[in-house]
Length: 291
Ligand SMILES: [Zn+2]
Image (cartoon, rainbow, N blue to C red):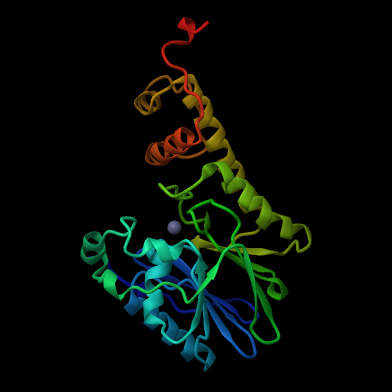
């Protein structure tokens, strides 16, 4: 069983707060308007979601009224069931994850002590974009396309010049790529986020894990993701196997990668699977034999 805990809330900008939750170091956000209070992400269990909402109520003297779940991964989503009676938003694909093989009840029970029967979907689906008026402050909820997951949402608070990126950006570790990620479109999704920085140079990006950063760091992560995709595609087209890439880390190092060796080894199977899905042609046999 993992250990659950919560840091105190910290104010980033006027009426915009963040806190960090264990077991995964997920960053949750709080945006206060004059009429409504928005919580961004909910933690790893219904009990943790309830604790986060209660601490937000203590901080502001008012209850949370709205929630955005940036994506369906447990550390962002499972706490939602602990925040009843609110309007909650998630990408339209989240609903289908509950009860599907994407969420294994046994693993969830053993790791988190959570009964998957207790989990609830968001009350409102977002397919592309949704604007919310919190009272004196507007927020925009945007699906930037498939990126870290198959249903990411980002939350933009224009007057505070803050963007909650979910796991599109991570600063406490290298960006996490899984079976539902798309490296092909991830860097394009970050283009959309970065375009806002042209108008607001002090735009602050709050990652799903780690400390907030400016546009420069987001652009660096975008370049690394684009390079990961390009290098993987080159190797895939050349017919280089995953085993050969692992061997290359210990040998001649013919190939270069934007991430640490272990991270590349961890995420390459998912990247290769995406290349396969996209029908990228793979060379069979040695280059010399293909005329
Ligand atoms: Zn995630």
